[in-house]
Image (cartoon, rainbow, N blue to C red; front, side, top):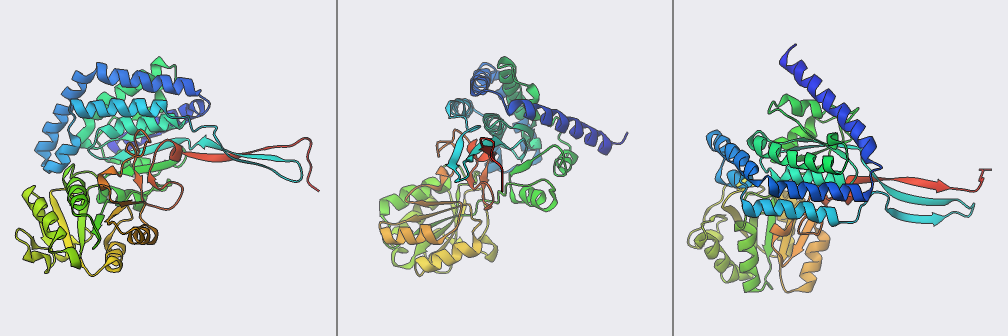
Length: 421
């Protein structure tokens, strides 16, 4: 048997097991799902030393592979981040169960009662890179929504993902739910990804979470429906009516808090009227913080700014680098974002309510912010406990994808012997 056929057989078995588990999970009570998530959270803390040891193996692998500092930061687990995973599991557990929720209900003149009710999607395939916390977030959210999930983490986070997956399965066992409800692809072989993309009989939707290369591959080659998640080319526009202190705080946080996440600011647009005042102060603070600012001709007059190349516009740096340019006003800022943005997250900093409304109503990004750091572009910060990703498409789910977004719906129609004439 060839290696390719081995992978094909492996994935077919995983798909069949997940589909069987999904059928059972669809009718699992809210109490059992809650119990599984709480038990999984307790297992993560109980097994933290084993998780840290597994993560240390991944860090060595990532370093030897030549990952950038930002990517290594995404990969690293410490006690604070592990506590974040535990808090996320508990937060998802405490959310209202979306399955069975009546979205709308009405009576027809013929006496029919019609309800539109939330129902699980079925089996979700999640393909992701580097960040091991996605293992816990995706597994928990899919479980909460009554879905089985097949997780295929990146090669860099292989050991960390396995350690976290073991905790999720411990939770399932404790709650008497099928362990096959959360399955982890047990190989680094990329052929497994190719198999997932064509498993139309067993996988209902694919969620890619990673860089442009991964997402592009999935969107090009998947025969299974995909929740689009493009790169986070995040813009911040500093309006002429911006508050200097807010601009400084928001931009610094949006760029430097964590550079390797999709909500990190990548391009700064500054109104020409404040370029040499508020803009200069923000840029100098970025430079002092260790950020490489690549600016247009006007902003290069500010000390520390280097020339931007043509391909710096519309680029996701995921590093201590930001592109910056001066704009004539809000209309030019909007035009720039439309040309170079990725419909992920964009922000305006202004005290002008009309400008904020225009910016937020005119742009069509999944998340649009006003006077707030783009690092809040996260399901956990939106009160979803966690997220499976940020969807930038316009079909089904958009923005942070939490448990509710991982459901579909069906119509339940009740009559009293009704017939159609």
